[in-house]
Amino acid sequence: MSKPLFIYWPKCSTCRRALDYLNENNIEVETRDIMNENPTKDELKQWFQESGYPIKRFFNTSGFVYRDMGLKDKLGSMSEDEQLDLLASTGRLVRRPILIGDHGIFVGFHKDLYDTLKK
Image (cartoon, rainbow, N blue to C red; front, top):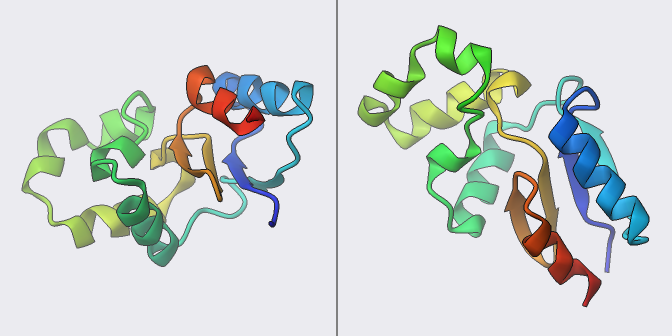
């Protein structure tokens, strides 16, 4: 079993809380800074399909890029392919952290989901 992949932005307080949780619970992960290495369209498509989440869940809807682009009103009329292209264009549009591993795919930090990693 390989280490889960933890995609995060070090300056994000939610990402830091999630990483602190992982460290405090001795859960080893491979880390990837989303601003230095944004997920590719193929990665995002795979994670979106495997996660069962709606694609909108992968968007950082509270970010300034999302707001500046007016995506709240545009996403509904965009195809899945167009949305994936957009997500792959910048790490600032992708909700973080993302944790990918044998446990599944977690988008955002939700302690109750992370607690399942301890079992």
